[in-house]
Image 1 (cartoon, rainbow, N blue to C red):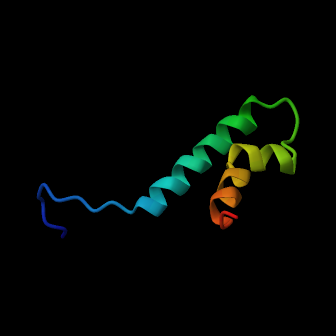
Image 2: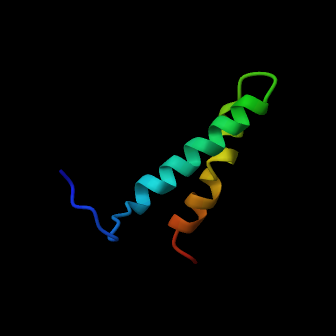
Length: 57
């Protein structure tokens, strides 16, 4: 049995993934048709992640 206490453990990567999944589910449920790959990338902010990963020139 896990101890009852005030300490909590947070997995920030898991929380971020859950948030992105939620945003994707909301976008998919609001769309009238299937989401395109470009729409999925937009929801998941792929372009922003790629821009941050590139070294500045």
